[in-house]
Image (tube, rainbow, N blue to C red; front, side, top):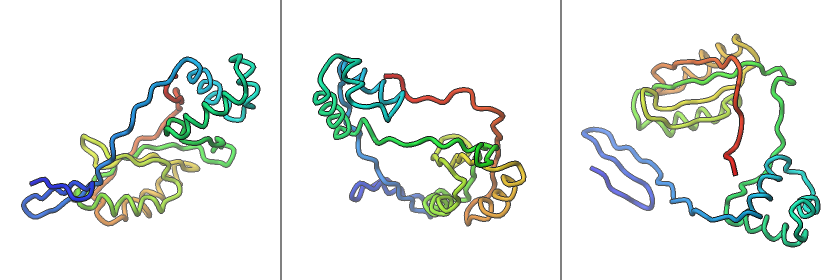
Length: 177
């Protein structure tokens, strides 16, 4: 049985009730050629001065500023950030871990516990064999083994994990504009 209550889907099976938050539909916006040029410049260097973008596109700095604010307000620009090279801090092992949970009802609590592990960079609900796929950043394989044995596999509801170590990242990019 499936019912909805304030944007939460509630699935009731024979002995188990599962709740999932329903994500609102994302509004799709249309951007023109000038917006695309602005976005490409910002994606290449988020610190580029607005006046430099204006000179390159041949429109006023005020127009660039207004368009950037419009793109931020629309949600297309979700922020900017500095990118830290983890290798400089001694973090050299990236691992992807498929997490099997005993019951789907334990997903929210498992995610809450995974959020407490600072080495967990990403967490995704998945289709297929695992309930959750996480991305970890560790100093080395010994650190990874410690995290698996003492922090991840000890989470209530985690029945087992499957680990894949990345040998080298070949592609790292955003969507093409």
